[in-house]
Image 1 (tube, rainbow, N blue to C red):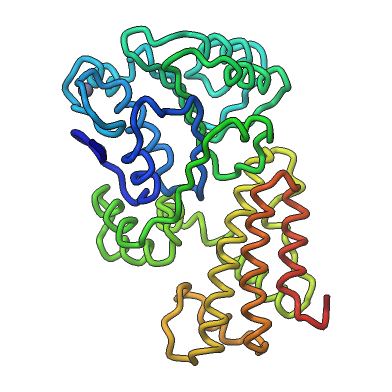
Image 2 (spheres, rainbow, N blue to C red):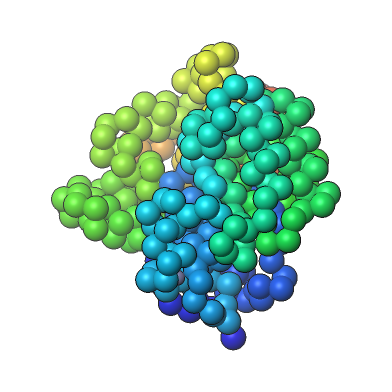
Length: 346
Ligand SMILES: [Zn+2]
């Protein structure tokens, strides 16, 4: 009865596949929040999940679609009346502009989209990517939906900064965590999209499990944040003033969600740097590192005793949990810096 019937082509997503693969349609929730770093396949999974619900071929499983029924054909063509999506950075709450396909949708639009039943399918799926709620009115629209959800309507939000969501909304959704992809999967996706295999291999090795980051590395866009994050780490563990201006936390043109995403990236890179630092301290200079390109910088760090290093790794995990609450991005960075500082300097 469980697993996938028909197609469901995603990379990674082991835990989400296991979760939905063991779910019966009768136990579907009305709201799912897909969380995890950028570029690990949250939106792709959400689309496949939506198509699975909208596919008209009878199946015993939640996941999987036939690809040939009228429902699948309309879905693939982007014209199915029961699939509503907005995948850019959505600001819900600004009035004016009416179509959901626009980058901005009004609270009124959201209320309308959420109140309709499936038109030709038993399900209606509203998928919102990287959502941020600009007004109380918009948040209220979603809260009202959760109070009395119409039968068969499923809302999927994807975000890499769940802390930016209102707690009242987050608590009504079932959170599904997407982890980093194995580098072999990242490499496979890059090669399949036409990237030169040798370049794909290098980009996948240093992308920390994110296809988005691997593409940014190939485009030369990511070097800035990546290098600045390792440099920030090196200063912080020495107890020196670590300039975090590359995170642009004072830049008013960035949304809270975007700032949180940058801080999330810093935390991930710091975790890699810290693990490499510990590996070098414990196992010596020959150990393979996660950040192969940062060996020189990490080898030059001062020594710290093993117990303090292990405590530091745990503290980085705590900071990551803090970053997933509604604490401000600036405070999260300060907290992280304090955890990294030499014990005597705190
Ligand atoms: Zn189908």
